[in-house]
Image 1 (cartoon, rainbow, N blue to C red):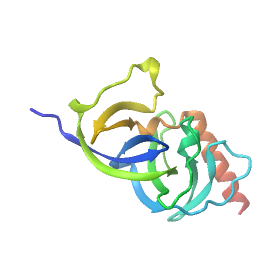
Image 2: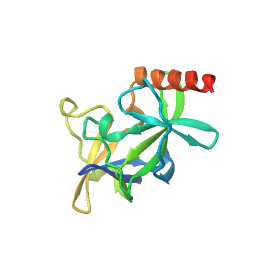
Image 3: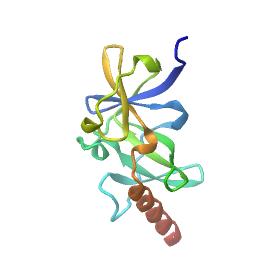
Image 4: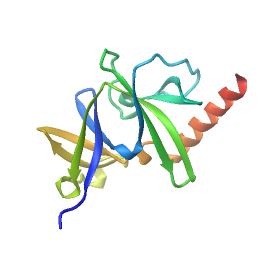
Length: 162
């Protein structure tokens, strides 16, 4: 019996293609300039409004140790809902990507793992898709416990000031 297909949203950061399970995606929106957020983590570009929340806008290029996202007409913001099981918290972040590439389906048997010594925890596996090498993200592992706490505390402090 074949494995069930899993659906992913793929996006570009520089020349690399990443994908996240669509169950984590709340919204894809056009780029909007974030509001400044002084004295924050280096990869937080500012904050954006999403429904009745203020979310940190994460520059994925910087977060992943790459060049910052270069703003263009194709730049998008992807709102993700993540869970930190260590803290028992569900939270949302907005991530800046160069462009949204595709929605793709993949079977687990088509994915290949990278040795634990050679990859960050947030990359769960890889996939070849339409002649592209795609990093499949474990979105819940992108931010460690310390980062989640820091982001949440900083946002809370700023909301109390306003």
